[in-house]
Length: 223
Image (cartoon, rainbow, N blue to C red; front, top):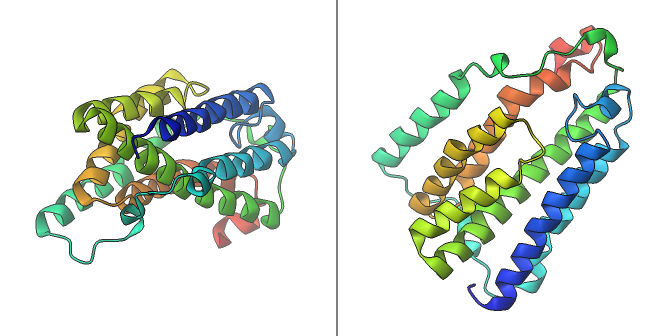
């Protein structure tokens, strides 16, 4: 995992993601509240997610010694790990994310069909799972094997923050404690599943209310 070709490959994929997210921002389609999506055009944001998923899964075809143990959910979880996990889960769930979300005039939102919303949600779930496999799986393990655990976590967190350079400063700063948390659980549990669960939870509590705004009022309560 620490040979030069692997490092070059992962660095190239990481740079491709930075450029892809920057392109999506330039096209005003990086989030559902971006100008293009608000006008009813979802093609670019779908393309961004699909391209990112393919890019993050590509190293699995090229690297022979993959850290596949990270994909296995632990058979036994100690009481200490369970309590810490539940405490972090509760903190993320109870955090007032609503105060950080952008305020958008509902009159500017072009409604989307349930099928369009379902496609976006499906892509988002696959994206986040692939994202954790790449960032907290391949990148973190490679950095730790190459430079040691401490520097591996520091570099991984920095790379994670830079991946959010297209976001606002508050979100970039929030990536520091969140990135450290996900690195800590990945190393402690020896699996990426806590990171996946936390990231999906964050998407549900922080992004789903935004996505619901694109549905007709009658559909919002149903979903």
